[in-house]
Image 1 (cartoon, rainbow, N blue to C red):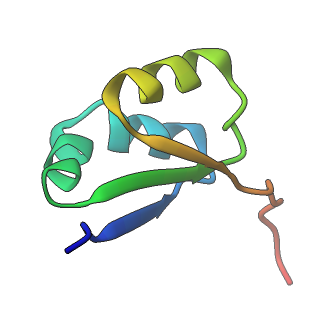
Image 2 (image 1 turned 45 degrees about the vertical axis):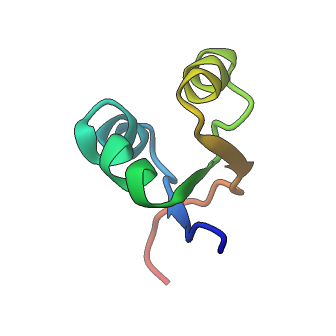
Length: 68
């Protein structure tokens, strides 16, 4: 039986920090494979931290917030 997979969408830098610098990521990873999709997926520091912790990264196209 394979593990469940969770995809976190983290379009802003502070949201990445909230997921990865707290116990949230550790809790999720105990129960599932975790991937974080972010515009910052090529940042070397983020990649190194995620690799060390076993978190996969995926690209997420940046978008601009504004009225429609």
